[in-house]
Length: 121
Image 1 (tube, one colour):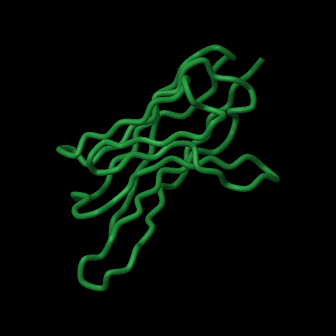
Image 2: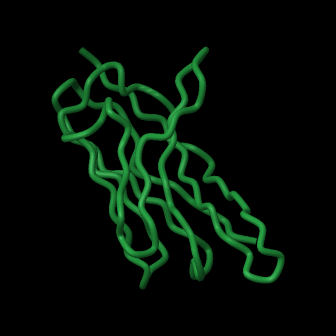
């Protein structure tokens, strides 16, 4: 089972930058998508960004032009570069891997432990 460990969260002033990392315990093989979700207290968890094995990306409208996700398959790591941070970006950020099990043909989801990002004004 894939285990994900996140790092890079913290406190930053509005307009600043943070870079989140998520390292997987093993190679992410087959058809898969790695992504970042965030959840603020009292709000639903939302997809922030995702990236396929081939590097195709997708972003929430609220972060387009400010956030960039990338992955390094050689070290089983996905990144989220967050620039021009706003107070409304404050949330717990979760790394996610959605992996197709080639034997069962079922999709499995794996989650990181979450890392707090706080943006002050």
